[in-house]
Amino acid sequence: MATPETPATPETRAVSVVYAQGQNHAWRDTLALLPGMTVEQAIQSSGFEAQHPDIDWRAGGVGIFGKRVKPQDLVKPGDRIEIYRALVFDPKESRRRRALHRQRQKQLEGKSRGRQRTV
Image (cartoon, rainbow, N blue to C red; front, side):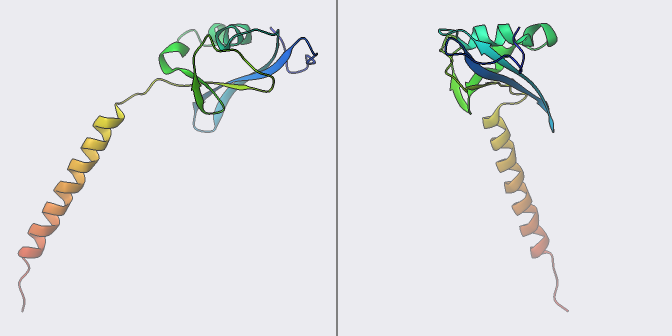
């Protein structure tokens, strides 16, 4: 496994592999990779799987600078490979629940206004 101190030569590509573990904490490794290496090979070379055996990086997907990529895509010099976490909930279901909650809140507000008496 390469280290951040490994110099990048014309035959290598310096890239970072990062994983956000939660609020304000991230795992990161910088590698010097040979030309033609893929995202998957970079993640394997980084030692991520050995250090995080309970995390299936394929389930959440991967990206480079915020754009989703496939594990077989090639890495370019300076790329930041991001390992995404799998979603804990379905975003569509979450939006539906929030909309239903807002609708109920409006109904409750309307009923409480109708009960007010003037003195």
